[in-house]
Image (cartoon, rainbow, N blue to C red; front, side, top):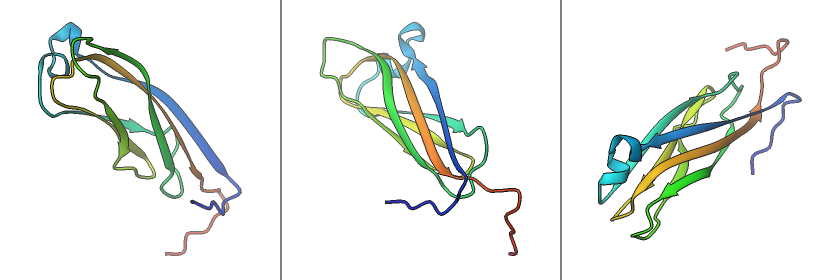
Length: 116
């Protein structure tokens, strides 16, 4: 569990279309085996410490002729942003994915002292 000692807590959120490979014949729609997509996200304001980030699939368009395999996560989280990482594998065909995200963490205050 993360304990926030700050009296200023920030919550940021957004929605990102990760790819639309059906229209372009991209690898998520036409490929096979392991595939990965990374989308950088920048927070509206810098956090004082690394925040907690949650991502989820908000919309998906997946081919019906194979199993539906998907993994979505937040990686490389910093005070300024993170990467949404989407993965699929085997014969899964994915046309489009949209992800929603939310971050929560401590914010700096104008009166905070940073001595070192």
